[in-house]
Length: 461
Image 1 (tube, one colour):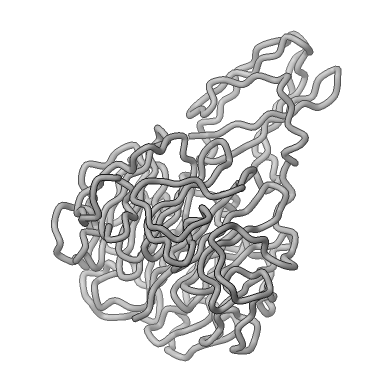
Image 2 (cartoon, helix red, strand yellow; image 1 turned 60 degrees about the vertical axis):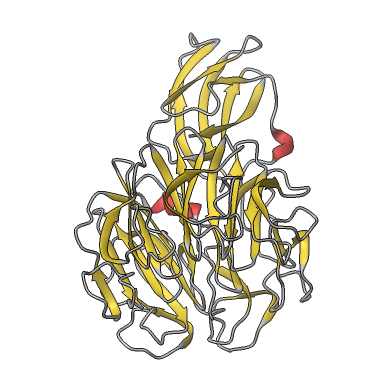
């Protein structure tokens, strides 16, 4: 039976530039990373051409996707891959037996092909054999396998071209499970459709649905993620909820491994800024840049130095300075602020990208990867600048008793300036900064003073 890696998607604002949060992604047993020159590096299994480099040979080190530039976001399905270009078009490669490449036929391709009739796309996601795209008008489009209604069109007929998901507007994020799909609306509610035998739709039943249904009792959600047969939501207070399959403890509620068809809180976990789901495990990135995992650990995919399952979150060993996370079937990976990528878990097809095929229950560095980030270096962060509250939601205050602040910039983890304000010299010690329009995540606040530049890290919840 095929198993899926599900891509983390974290975006709460409709903007092409914010799609860069999807800088790393995982497929079932392959992995993807977006390089600073907008090309894509891939590694792992390649039996259907899911590495997109023009052949079908596996690789345990990164190789470049053929003839693909201008990419701003990535997604990985079971054995296919997706890329969003800066023009708002979507490109796909790999297996296409259910039309998951969306180019009007069902022929596999080991090089990227353009998805038909899609423009104005701001976010992408992939399920097991289906694909999802969010348009700038807040509508959702899907293509590929549909035997459980995972396309959300009101029928169970697969499609090799994009079709609109029924009745969904005002959507700000999408995510894919193996046989189900998720959407986050601008009112912070979650909607789901597709297979529901384990309760992955979270609506209190176990009946599959080929149209979106609202997940029960969830408000204040800022991000969503899908696992094989489970789902996750990140709330604006930094806590996580999960629902669906729980046989390995992937819901992280610490009480039982019984499935739940309504959301339950993941325990002992606060200050979360990102989430991701794999086959039977889950991940979270906290605002202190540490990674926490729970669920299935038979191949070391929790990264804590052993192979014992856990139904409560466990910290991944020796990982700090993390700015993004993603997950595959049985492997996990994280991007550090210095641009290095670290993987752990199963490695039978080289999906850890470290030049061998040996499993690892602790993080190992991906070999020879392109430069993936140009953000502020961790060692440049200083303590003489105070910002509060941290995490912040709508606004924060910058304070210093040591120097006059003349200019404030905010930089995201990709090195992109997202806020820039020149101040009057009368603004000496206190300055309020509006961050309400920023997506959730980790940022760096840079101030220019008479003593030079100072930097502090903060989290937007």
